[in-house]
Figure 1: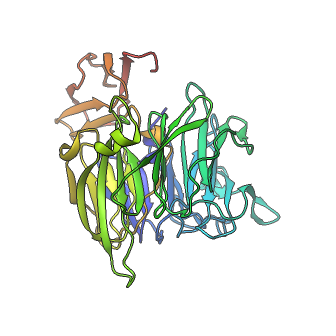
Figure 2 (figure 1 turned 30 degrees about the horizontal axis):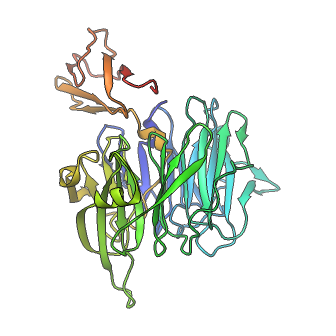
Figure 3 (figure 1 turned 180 degrees about the vertical axis):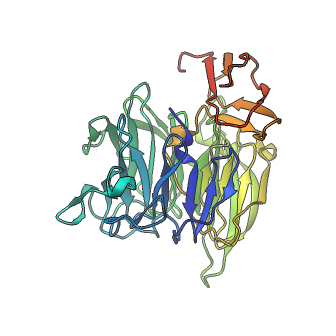
Length: 425
């Protein structure tokens, strides 16, 4: 699976990040203006395709697609949209939208064909309006996430309503509108705000419900079944943002809301250690470490292609950054004023992606001609053997974190073959 589909991010008030160089660079070309929800997708080469706030879709030229208006998401929805490609078809993408809490539009999906509008893409229409398929009618949670199906060319898309999770499969036939059953009778949410995230390895799920709690589950990425609900404690604060570390061993949670007079309240950033021997609620909560606190409203967390986790900062021109997400406690190295957004502003949300994009990434540093370029690979399992091919007809390497100097500037395809200890490769 290629990982460059998450190369471009657009969020907040005209804010953006470009990971094409391997490190995030501020991108001010975007025209998005959203309080929370947003979604972006690039192709396997890392070239921007389109982005959305759940209601409007912009193409790679930052123009609204011809029929890219009036989708039934909402920019005030925590996760207003997520974009999922159709397996084995580089032209078709599905945009899943989620209405805001209290809205009646529920969960829907739309189809975008990149062959339309001269290759810039457009929403497929029916009778002149965007053709939608309703998956959940009426008010539903402001939550959606996605992950690859284990050992299958398909994706799971997961959403939530009341005390039930709805899990849909997207495969070469398209979206199966009949959800997987057996995912009900969990915590009944009295607050639909907050992020839903699945771990990059596809076996853990977390759901934040602001005023009514945050819960973690086991997820079976073979059959889509969710089980083993456990409540996490965040000191009676309102949980909102959630994210897993690249190796799926740590969970990060942000809290925050506002005081009755509308002023910012205390917002905290926590780490939970999922690598405990007995991951009960008690043991998980005992592993909790507070990494940062300040006065703000609330903020999303999102893993990037560099294996680091980014934190939105409401109404500010910076993002926070967790540099070493799989490290224990303060060794995770959170930096508050980490990423400058130029004259653009972060709000509460960051774009969610298919979480599998962030598993087994090749990380690269020092990309100038003549530099000693360093390579690293993220793996969810202990590595038994490794073989690097640097794409320039040079010798290969079996060093875990090799360095290589390129003689000529150009584009190189880097290949790494990894054998892990377990059978799940």
